[in-house]
Length: 155
Image (cartoon, rainbow, N blue to C red; front, top):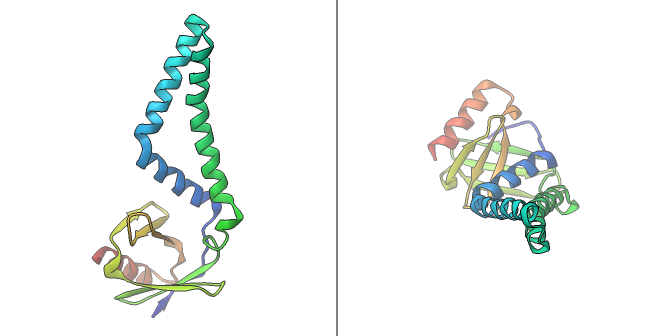
């Protein structure tokens, strides 16, 4: 099996992934709440009615609340195991991730349902909501990188 350098995912990167995923899944809700906030803000400016101000605050407050909630989730101590240092071992058929905390998991490449290339890393989905974060700079050689890339795109 080929091994990679040890790596860990930063809370900042994890927050970016969580935020982008939430926006992609619920973009319509965030757009609707923003429109409600804008419409009621303009209505409040025109009519000076308190109910319009409440709805405007709700519209913008909801977006701020979701942002802060996801930020706190990504940076919480509960995520420390998920964000801990890992190392990947792979061959042509199997991907094994070992954590420095002692846990490990093995997945055949054929179980990877979707691969998202995010520039500096890949997201390897094994189900709709479960993915592996794999940075591209953890390989010892270009040959290892190419072998891994072929294996994930073959699935």
